[in-house]
Amino acid sequence: MSWKELYHSKWTRFSFWALLYLLWVIWLGNYWWLFGLIVIFDHHITRKVKWVFWKKYYKEGEKHNVLLDWLDAIIFAAIVVTFFNTFFFQAFKIPSSSMESSLLTGDHLFVSKLAYGPRVPQTPLTVPFTHNVLPNGKESYSTLIQNSYRRLKGFGHVKRGDYVVFGFPNGDTVLSKVPAEDYYMFSRLAGRDYAIRQYGPVKVRPMDKKDHYVKRCVAIAGDTLQVIDGRVYVNSQPQEEYPGIQNTYMVVTDGERINPKNLDRLGINTAELAFSSRLPGYPAMPLTAAMKEEVSSYPNVIEVKRNIDRYPPDYNDSYLTIFPFHETFEWTRDNYGPIWIPSKGATVSLDTLNLPLYERIITSYEGNSLRVADDGRIFINGAETDSYTFRQDYYFMMGDNRHNSLDSRYWGFVPEDHIVGKPALIWFSSDKNKSFPKNIRWRRFFKFV
Image 1: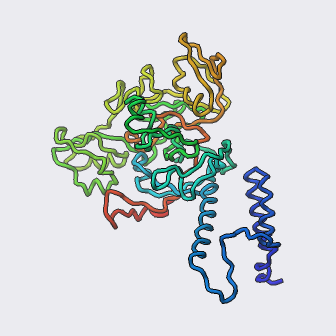
Image 2 (image 1 turned 90 degrees about the horizontal axis):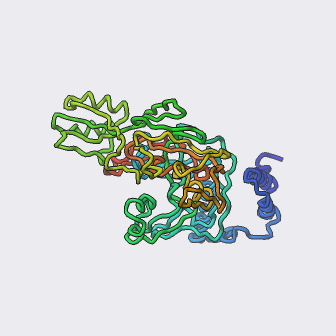
Image 3 (image 1 turned 30 degrees about the vertical axis):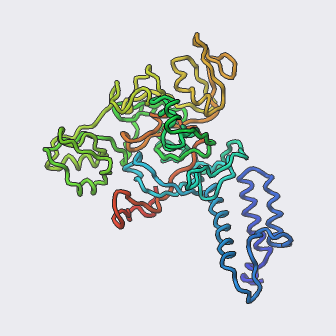
């Protein structure tokens, strides 16, 4: 038999697809899906059932129906893209400047789900090519079927320093009119009744339908993290100063503004930059270490001083915005912790002093009831206790744009079951503050992360 005959043999095609399908079932770990081999066998060999019922098979010389051909192409694309989005790679767009200068606003990424292992869909009834909303703002999913959390085998685990895409931990409840806002922070600052009255009603989302965030993992389960004057320490060791990390600096000038072309060449997001004639200069210019040296060399720059937020925090922050939102923790964004990151199987002693650190884990992430009596006794699931054992690992995430990032300092730990994947490739990037074609960042095309 020639290679051409072998290629066109129905038994060859059946064997190829059956093998791929079998490997996928083994990876999935749900052997009920082996019944799918019957479909593959019939599709390639017996052909008793028209499985692709929407597809029209033309006789020789028969005129093609363009609409049916397009329908076939669209359905096929939806199935293939959905399969790849679920188990391999998913497209993601950087929505904010929290990761600048590492990942830029307007970067379009492919996120690898194989890096940490893809999650089996918990809410499988979803409109293709959507995550949680339709263009009209309505939910794009149905909760009629809800599966338990399960993660397939991946190439590795989350490590310190990794960029990680994950479900926003506080995204289980959103305000309908401002779904991108943190409902819990909004309620703490303005009051729950006011928040709902002005921006509600509230919507409750399943865990796998929370909005996606991307940050850098700075501490993993079992680590102890502390931030001292803006420097991150993990297990008492200073963490590597990654090139893309930036903080804000007070840049004092001789009264003149810095040439905008110089700022643009440095990659500074001028949309978030303000000049104060009273200083004179820039009260909060975001700079990396390399950018700081460059700015310091400009002839009209007199001083460049790093902004450090010490307790009590400045007007941007308060104990109501800094996790764990209790005034006994005198922490700021630049002087934070020490804080221990919970790990699966570890047991922690509980009292009313440290309970704010673990309350959301106990209730929201691990599904227990929690009550604190007037005398300070703690009850979990109705039983009095002075300890708690964690059921999964947790992580601490921070944005590289340290003074413009809503991250774990503002909402706490990221549960392991919220991890989506790892950014792998920037395939397109554009700057919304510029007009075409200057807005296209050609150098970032097909850049590995």
